[in-house]
Image (cartoon, rainbow, N blue to C red; front, side, top):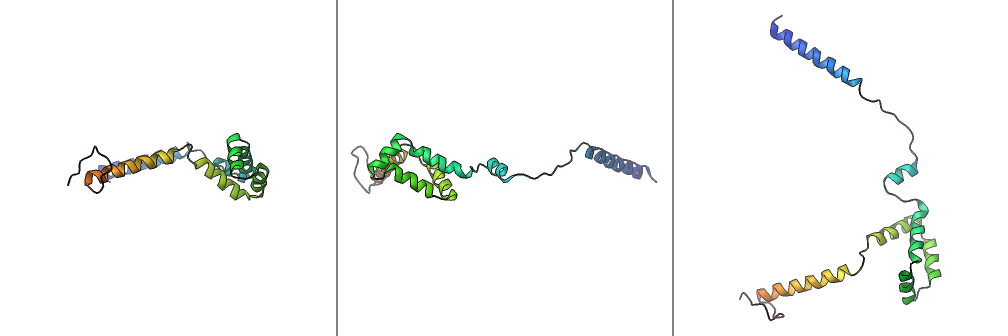
Amino acid sequence: MTSHTTRTTRSIATTVALCLAATGFLAPAQAALVATEHVAASQGVAAESAAHDKLLATLQRADVAAALSQRGISLDAARERVAALTDAEAAHVAEQIDRAPAGAGDIISTIVFIFVLLLVTDILGFTKVFPFTRSIR
């Protein structure tokens, strides 16, 4: 054998020995049964009655009760409707409430959009709404 072959064999043997030694430091995997509630909680899914409780708590707020009465809906009828919802429906409604914008953010953004749109059309010469703009035509 040549010295080149001997060095290659030694380096391969050393690499294999180091890899085998490193496998001893790895922790063995442990398998166990996981309850459905634990998985659901870890993924952010609420318990079955949590959505109903959240909707009923929302109905207890004074501003919600006033808005319902303003629209001709009694608080007891709203509670009965919440109780009649399935778990999936209640979770969907609770999610919609969480994602709904608070305040009048949509109205302000719409007004700003219309202002910018009219400003651009004035500058392009399609309309003449604002006296402070000059047309590029």
